[in-house]
Length: 156
Image (cartoon, rainbow, N blue to C red; front, side, top):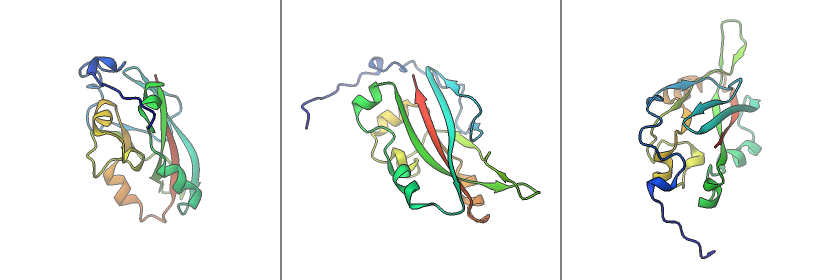
């Protein structure tokens, strides 16, 4: 539409070093929300709480449906964010614990976070993607249905 096109060579990405995320092995978890940003390669990643609800309100749906990366220009700007709905568990005293793990891993097309649907798989495979732990998503949804909306922000 705009007449622009991009030729993506591995060296054109500022985060293109081979295995620079190897210390974040598949399945490594991060608490949610995080107190301070943490660093993965050149990325500063922050996990922030946006809302807490027993149900998923309709205004959350628009946030959850926003693409993490809208265009190649957006990616090359060096920052992007997306939202996740994380189930909340209760401790023995009935207090909500918003510390379910988020996990870094290579997602497949079918199981990637909703914000990554429609984003080129090659881009997704290059970045350290953070999403809900599959086991926590299924095992904790039945605990009174409490949810936490979080924003995950990446900045170079």
